[in-house]
Length: 74
Image (cartoon, rainbow, N blue to C red; front, side, top):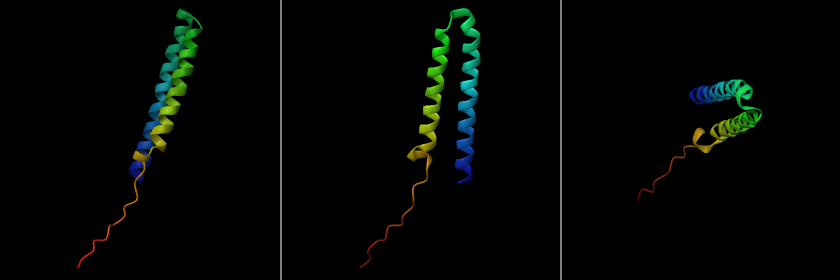
């Protein structure tokens, strides 16, 4: 379980850093291209939040319960 928490924190940190990087690019691009670039940042930010939420709450990131199957032996 500790490995899963580490990966989850690493994913959240990546999403935060990526969003911040794109935000800084868009901030400086607003002066060159105008306000529509700000809309791009809002879309990227919401997309990264959605991606991070899906990845942390997906069934693949959780361990499935291991059930031992009993075999009938005659």
